Amino acid sequence: MKQSLQLKLGQHLTMTPQLQQAIRLLQLSAMELSTEIQEVLDSNIMLEVADGEGDDEGWDARNAANNESTTPGDDTDYEAPHEVGGGDPGDDDAPPAAADIPDELPVDTEWDEIYDTLLSSGSTAPARDDDGSDYERGSTAGESLIEHLTWQLNLLPMSDTDRAIALAIVDAIDNDGYLSADLAELCAALADEDGAPEEDEVRAVLRQVQSFDPVGVAARDLRECLILQLAQLDAATPWLAEAQRCCEDFMDLLGARDYNQLMRRLKLDKDQLAQVLGLIQTLNPRPGSQFSSEQPEYIVPDVFVFKHKDRWRVELNPDTMPALRINPYYASLIRRADSSDDNATMRAHMQEARWFIKSLQSRSETLLRVATAIVERQRAFLEHGEEAMRPLVLHDIAEVLELHESTISRVTTRKYMHTPRGIFELKYFFSSHVSTTLGGEASSTAIRAVIKKLIAAENNTKPLSDNKIAAILSEQGVQVARRTVAKYREAMSIPPSNERKRLA
Image (cartoon, rainbow, N blue to C red; front, side):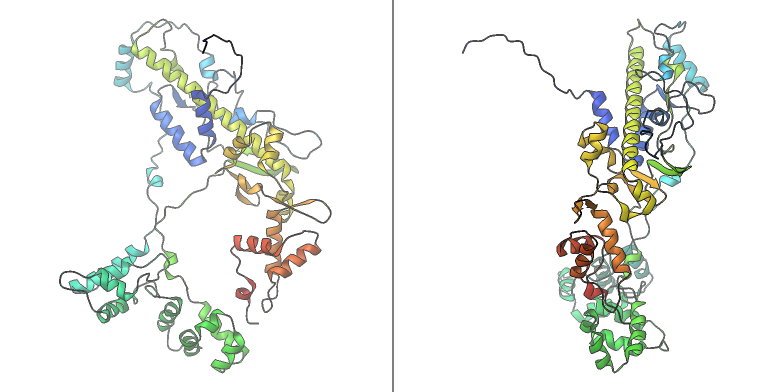
């Protein structure tokens, strides 16, 4: 093979560190972005939070984004905010604080002298925003069910053997409060060199655990859970005996909602059975659900949408994006012709700070543009609710903003919009569509809202089946199959018609 040299001209995208940082910041949620900003502030000496009042050198990513030209044309009633408490975002290549600093600055002291002065005085160092609210970041998880039961167990006088059995029972209780292992499995798990405990011994300890709070805990099935709760009620409770018999002997009929059979078996009329069922419905089928060891997840809206003078306005949340700037004092210490390690470090920090501020600006601008485009197309939802939601996919917004669909996906993931109708993830406004008889399209979100409205208004004694709901939607011009109705209903955690049946 003959070797030769060839010139080839082409274009390709290079993932520079700046681009990688911008993409990474774009997909962070508000809470993660706050953590990221704080970490950069702690590690980069050139970055600081602007004071706010009278600080002309500060740069605010929110203001830079809000000052962008995002207002739609004059033929729409939508309006973007003009400015949110800030000034001119300044030069595109550098923040105002850095742009105002000349390349050559008179420096008549050495870095070691400046460093010693800073250590001794501590007055010129950039202040960190420490409000002493560390307790807010502490663990706020509640007491778990296992911890609650163990605390009660420690209050009881028991032998070592019974305590070991009780601990094994508590450990086998799931999050709903039910015992997930049978007695034989517990006996096998407790076996040692002296043998396994008898099932009667385990059953006796189980009865003690079942007397713990919450009432009905450690039950082996729903029937036993309801019976344990009924046993704790006052003997004078009306219809208590009938409710206990219903749960003990006719649980299958109760689950199938066969009210005619229940009335015949219990020898009750319709009104009396309604009283019995009312008492049973006061019980908790999941006694352990009130305890949770999971860390609560807080939602911080990234965008505010509100109506002002009959026009919808979109603003970025000022609390999620602090005003950052280059520290002018430290920037003035950089000497152009100096190649010392300290000077090189400050130069590197300066460049990283500029990249970070520019990435934040890009994130804010993109988020505001996407939110603006979403609000412009979903104004009917903001005005009238879910039933007016329009079909929308990522490609629609990407085409309008001339961005890639992957960018729209990153922007809308774990980003939340605060509207007069509640807080929604930006992904919520995107939905598939279903064809209508008139040749149009209906959003799946709107169809789910109609299904929920139909079920809420149905006759409880004769609930609507999925076929009937599909027929009603077809009469309204929406072509939806029965299995599609069932899928939407299950997605909204609505039980089927036989489980929604009620006694009049």
